[in-house]
Structures are given as structure tokens and as C-alpha cells.
Amino acid sequence: SQQGEEDPQALSIQEGENATMNCSYKTSINNLQWYRQNSGRGLVHLILIRSNEREKHSGRLRVTLDTSKKSSSLLITASRAADTASYFCAAGMDSNYQLIWGAGTKLIIKP
Amino acid sequence: EADIYQTPRYLVIGTGKKITLECSQTMGHDKMYWYQQDPGMELHLIHYSYGVNSTEKGDLSSESTVSRIRTEHFPLTLESARPSHTSQYLCASSEYGLGGGYTFGSGTRLTVV
Image (cartoon, rainbow over all chains, first blue to last red; front, side, top):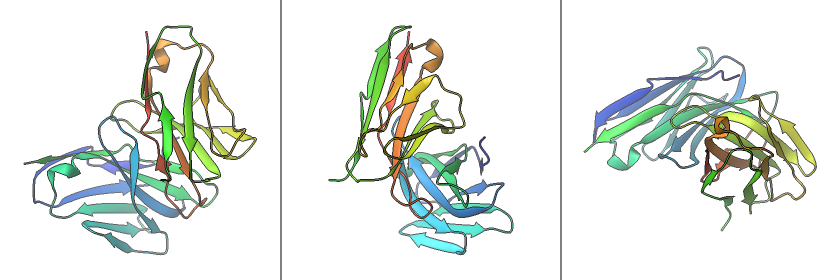
């Protein structure tokens, strides 16, 4: 069963602004991953943060992880129209090789 | 170039037909997965494989079957398609069990009429 939750479900901002998406999970994890999905396409892996890390950066992406609160956030700085997509978090568990997926946040960047 | 390929990209088929969705990867990944996703919704795991001759059912009850005879190939078969099977089907693979991300194919959008 799906155990990840994302907030907000949808987000619409102006180009150039920062976008923040949040993810919560219920179980013990080994890592937390974020993916992007353009409409009608497959998912693209963006960034992975391990359970012993608190913050990670990749270009305009910043991910934080708070294992005590079982939550993670994805920040996209200086957003661009090309960032318009759905963003999914996925929790990698200790017990197996599967991922528990959130329902996704639909991000719209207005030019 | 290492990648994962799904064919067909789109498929419209009549009720009762047997179909096979193809998935192949060139990265030598041991682990492969099939997900079902309705537009804009969460992913549901329907099948996975941890290696050749290893297949398991996922969380979502499915009337499909899979096989893993070769590392690079993980086809999904529907013996008798129904309108309720209309959805997008995503194939993915991963190399590291807990330490790496998944690589996804572009998906097959299936419509059963």
C-alpha cells in the first residue's frame, strides 16, 4: 500500500520564484528519492538522500531529510518554465529493494 | 547509450485480445519493475524481478503476467484485455538495491475499447 504523502498536490508559481514540495512517509527508510515526470512520459531520477544525511544539493535542487519527523522537502530555486512537471518522492526501505511512492505534486511555472 | 526501452508507446486494442508490452534495458541491471499509473496519479507496483527466472507480484492486484528469461528483457502480458486495464504502464530498472535510483522507460499508454 502507498505510504508516501506529498504536499501540496498542486503548485502554481511565477517563473523565477522558488518552489517547495514536501513529502512524508510512515516507515523506517534507507534513502529518500525525488523524481520528475513530464506529462505522459516516464519518470526521471533527480536526487537521492540517504537516511544519515540531512541536506543535499544538485544544481538548482535542494533536498532536506528529517528522519525524526519522517519528512523530506524538495526546493527548486529560480524556477523556469521547463520545470513544469509532476514531482514524486519515493522512500527506499531497509527491508527490500522496492520504493514507496508519494502521490506527486503537480508544479506549474507561469512565464 | 545505456537506456531502457518500452514498446509500443501507444496501443489501442479490443476487449479480449492478448497483448504483450515489451521492456528492455541495456544497463545490465538485475532488478526490474512494472508499474501502473493513471494520468497524474501515484504509481502502483504490479510486478518485479530481482534477476533471471525471478518474478514476484507487487502490491496492486493484476491480471497480467511477466517473465524474466534474460537479464535485459522483462515483458508484461495480458491474456485477455479489458477496459479496466486502460492505463499507462511504466517499466523501470535499478542496479543497486538500496543505494541507487530507478531508470524508467517512456511508458506504454494502453487503451482497451
